[in-house]
Image 1 (cartoon, one colour):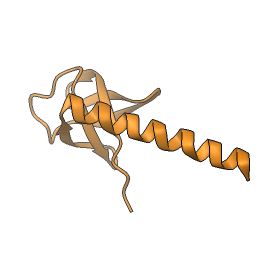
Image 2: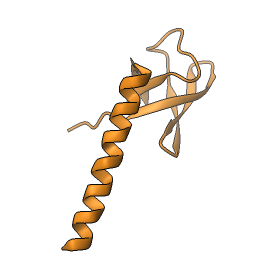
Image 3: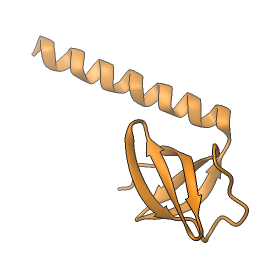
Amino acid sequence: MCLAVPAKVESIDGEYAEVDFGGVRKRVCVTMLPGLQVGEYVIVHTGYAIERLDHEEAKKTLALFDEMAKMTAEMERTE
């Protein structure tokens, strides 16, 4: 099972970029996405940025993940 979490491109250095997964930063290969720009959102799989993601869709997805995390934490408190 794969979980696709949007990551924001923070910097690009040749074939690699530093991306931010909501506070967790990772270095990923960006050779599959020529012309990628700082500020864009990408989907990362096994260390490779494999797809660009529309800014608004990325924000919606991140908001849903945040909501799920809050609901999970609330359920754990009530168990």
